[in-house]
Image (cartoon, rainbow, N blue to C red; front, side):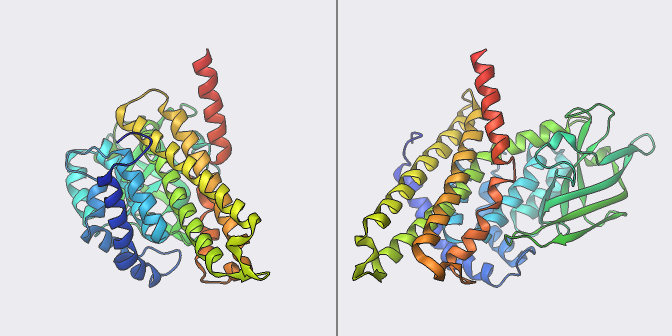
Length: 377
């Protein structure tokens, strides 16, 4: 395929995935509890082989495959998309930087949907500025540390079976002196609470009260944890855009169906020029965002230059477009779209968060500008 169009095989696979999601995953999602891990849903992702696509045998996940997975799932069931994405986010540092023993212990469990992963980077005082984290890893004997501090806005916390935790092991400021640890649930001193959020994602806090870790728990190199985090986020950033495109497409599909069946002022909404123009604008922006996401993913997969800039552009445009598309679809539907349980009411709550997490919109704009200046220089 090119960056401008999917081939027939990709198109068929995405169509089959959307159908599978609607038939098998959506019913499980509807029976889950908002803001909590839906373990039957995670198990189904494993049974259907979708988690295996996140962690191929050769260890190399194509960014485009990840984007197609997330877009297709999001179009039919945002809860299934989020469950899959959070598994990938929490586990990819193990795939990329883990030891043979760490991978042997956790990858089969995650792939089968039996273990749930967590990515613990953000803190109460360090969100978009990830290099400002302060969770302390104090030396404890010749081969260990004690973790003390708090993480906040953490995926799947505090229920996850293990977490990729980023802590400060050195005295150096900023990105230097940060180490990534694989911390299983149940370690002494590890607690946490759920957070009730606008969107129904499972998020919480993790509190570390002298939690013991050793060199056997290190992911990558000591003091090299920031690179582990950035490598994961660089892969997943375009796919956040894919998630947004999937939601935007679902909103457009709902608006089109409503405009064709709803009558007002003596005829169907579709005959009103103002509605038609809104639908055309939605479709155009969504297609532009989709193509930029695919281009960024293809650049990542081929090692093309400017990956950071392209990924930031993809996330920026796609998430802002999704916000616009969902809001416009709500406007076309009117008050019924605001009723609890309506698809668009659900999407309206879901669509806000991607403009903040994994680098807020303002961070993406700053990153793009920095890359433009650097290229110009």
